[in-house]
Each structure stands twice: as C-alpha cells, then as structure tokens.
Length: 528
Image 1: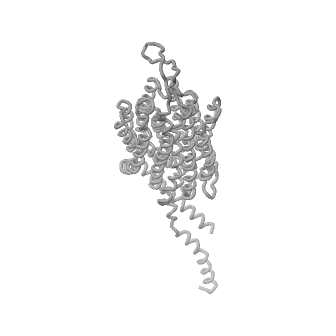
Image 2: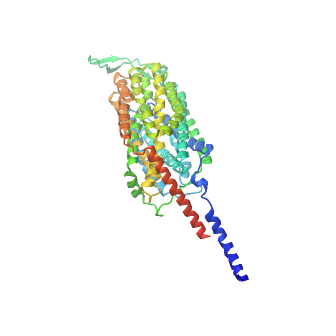
Image 3: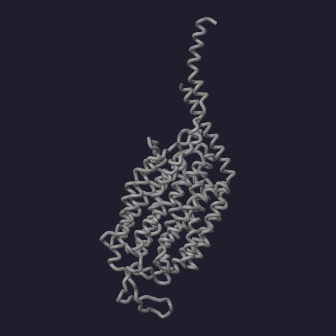
C-alpha cells in the first residue's frame, strides 16, 4: 500500500468514527423506562389535591349553602347546580380542543394551562361563597360565578388529568403516579371537608333557630286539612355568622389551591412519548374525536363510571341535608364525613395492591359494590353506631370509584394507540370527554335531586322540614344510588381490556418506542 493510500484510509477512519459511535449507542434508558422519583410522584399528586379540596367543599356544602345561607329558592338552587355542571361539561371538550392545538413550550404543553388559570380559579371560587347585599339578583350572581368557576377549573383539571400520559411511558410508573394522585386527592377531599365542615358547622346548629311567634299554615299530611303549626326560622344573627364563616372557609381553600399549584409546577417534568407514527401530520380535531368515540373500550369504561359517578355525587351532595333533616344526626355529620374520607385515604394503597394482584376490573367490582348495602342500612337503621360503620365501608367504595377509572383510562389510551397507529396526540380528547360525560350526568342528577326538594316543599327559611322532604332525601341517599351503581357494574362486565390484553399492549408499545428511539438515532447519525 502506498503512502497516499494510507493517508486516505486514515482520513476515512476518522470520518466514520463519529457515525460508528452514534450507531453503537444504546437507546437512552430514561426515554424507555422513564422511572419517576418519589418526589416527582408526590409533587404531581399534590397538584391535584386543591381541585379536590374545592370540589369537596362544593359537593358537601354548596347545596345547603344556597338554600339556608344565600336563601335562594330550591328551584333556583336546582338551576344553579344543573346549569353550572352542564356548562362545566360543555367546556371540557372545548378546552380539550384548544389543548390539542397548543404547542410545546419550555415547561411543556399542559403546564402553562394549569399555572395560568390558577389565580382566576381562586378569585371565582372565593366570590362563589360571598353573599351580595341585594336579594333579587342573587340567582344571577351565583349562576354566573358557578359557571365561571366551572370553566376555569376545567382549564386546570383537563390538562392535569392528561398529564398522566406525559409523566412516563411505563404503565407501572403511570399506575403508581395515579395511586399517589388518588391518595392525595382523597386526602384533599378530606382536607376540604375538614376545613369546610369544622369552620361552618356552627352555621347549621339548631341553637340559631328561633320560634316563630306568628304561626304559619301548612299541611301535616294526616288528612285533616290545613292546620296551624309552629315553625322555627333562622335569626338574623345566624345569617350574619353563617356568611362570615363561609367566607373564611373560602379564603383558606383558595390559599391551599395556590400553594399546591406552585409545588406541582416546581416538581413535575412533562415528557412527550417517543413512539413513532407513520405520518407526521396530526389529524384534525373532529377526525380524532370520531376515532375516539368509535373506540369500544373507551365507550364502555365511560358509560360504566358515568352511572357510578352519578350515584356517588347524589350521596355526596345530599348527605348533609340528609343528616340534618331526614335523620337525627345533625350533630355528627361533620365527623361522619371525616370518617368516610379517612377510610378512603387509608384504603387507596389496599386497592392499589389489589388491582396489581387481581386486575383492575376485579378491583372495580369488589370495591364499588360495597356502598350499595351500606347506604340502604343508613336509611333504614339511622343510629350513630350504624352511621359510623357505614362511613368506614363507604370510604372503601369511594376510594375504589375514584382510583379505578383514572387507572384504567391510560390503558384505554394505549389500546387506542395500537388500534390506530397513524393517529397521535389525542390524549386530551380522551380525558376531556370523559370528564364531559360524567359532569353532564352529575349536573342532571344534581338538578333533578334539588328539584325533588322543591316538589317536596323544602322551606329555605325553616329549621324543620316536612316529612315529605325527609322521605325524598332518604330516596336520594338510598334508592337512587343503588339503581345507578347496579347499572354501572352491569356495563363494566363488557369492558374488554383484561390483564392479559393490558400486558400484551404494554409489550407492543415498548417495541414501538424502541423503534422510535432507534430511528431518531439513525437520523442523527445520517445527519452527522
């Protein structure tokens, strides 16, 4: 070999060496496994807690606040709750649409939504619990602020729910993060009920009631016609005190919301999924929506938990009224609520282990079905001991109903990715429309339940209610949830993603991600 040939060969070796180094590199392990640290999971979970703190306060106390403190009619309260929930449901797909059009920033695609809307959520929530000086326009006031709050909390909740898919590509890591999230969210529900319940409990004691000297006319329902009965009405001091304590509680919840959002922003990193798609252009929103709505596992899961969520919502929203007017537990309701939530918090790790061993579908059936006999027992045996026993069992079921849908929804998204390999970036559609359907159904159930109190002649200014009101509340706590949960569990039987299917999907997606990372490595090497 001549001296010139040696120099040419040496130059070629130097040129090919960088390419060989790139080709010999292993795919980055963090892109494949993306294991989450304890701190990341905890900060992610803390981010979801304030929404549940506020949701707990509104779920347990907004209805009785509108009736007894703001003193709008049951018909108006029904309209506020129904229109507000339906409006919140309508905004879910709208927010999902705008999220799919959002571009990635330095802090991600979802994080700017959550951070940006938080100050406005806090302001709208605070004024939702403010009683204006005027009386004739209070219905418009509460309807406007409740709709505004629902819109803004949607701008927070939809991207936060979809963030699960962008924490890690590992199903186990996502399930673990979801368990952390559910634990902290139920803890947030506990904190919300504790803050609201302990601060405003004095606003619902009988000692604030005064005997009304001028008797009011009413029917006793015994066939004797109209009789003169003595009623008890709320004093003005009671109303002033009630307004004050509800504002204090609103301020505390607002402060919690701000602090938790800052913690999430500082501790969570948003990642994109590296799996490849045959096409580079994203499908239009309406085409992605049609694909999602045709996906059988998604429809089955959404329909099942729609009915289950309605049942839980009925129990939540009417429980304080039930304890106050249907059974003699008005002095215990805040402690019963805390018992339910403590039981739920402590049982989340139990259900997480159960679903890992026996599967998510089995966990749903075993966990949620317990609440049916419990609520019926409370209706027919309304004593303090039974109430606390029922609270413990109900907490187990509520924990399962909260954990399972958010743990199963990522599996549905993975199944969709394999069934539609040319479609990517529709995570927000899955989560926003799931929330849409459940909110819409909850809005209808809340509106109808409050309307039932109107037909039962609920008196907003009275400390005692007619027997028809008590019977209506018993039906809303016992009979209606039984029907809805039964319907939801029957639908869940047809959910097709078993543990075998889930594991097969995980293996297939891992192969796709390896191909995606290798293709990116090859592109980098060819450019070099």
